[in-house]
Image (cartoon, rainbow, N blue to C red; front, side, top):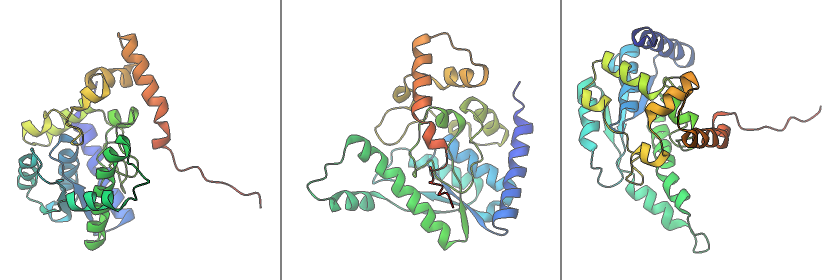
Length: 243
């Protein structure tokens, strides 16, 4: 039922319109991880704006085992790119905390994506840019993102598209197949996305689109994660004074 070509073309037009309304002549700034999400966002931006208006930012933390995938993407698209190693920034910030503050495992996990987002905005302000959010519907549905980290951005091409659907779009865009079908790894704890989540994207995507799932235990987990993380998808609550 999913018409990948139609959705791809509509997304390209949506990106064009966003830039016409929110920064004519501005550049798209994309954090390039080497995974399918950032690869597809970068490719969509190239089709919408032209390669001269897309800038990739590679942000390894020390040594990145799959950094070759990031280089493969920027070379394939022919886009300008910069490498900013964020290790010293992350370690410097950790070292700045007083002894009274012991960073929790969750705080340690979420610090790198927030440093990376700060890096993207710094690059954006140096190159008249707009920062692309690269999260997809599947990740957002269960909160598999870091608030004010990879969940931030100025425009989000993939927020309403599932992982299963993204793969079809990636193939249409002519991206290297190994980038499209690459097993997603969070790059933070060494596990795959599906190991962390406790269910497959195929199962999740089917549930999102059809409401059908056979494993009741997995259904309960997905529902719990969705409910717990809905706040990430909403605007910050704001007090409205009576005036």
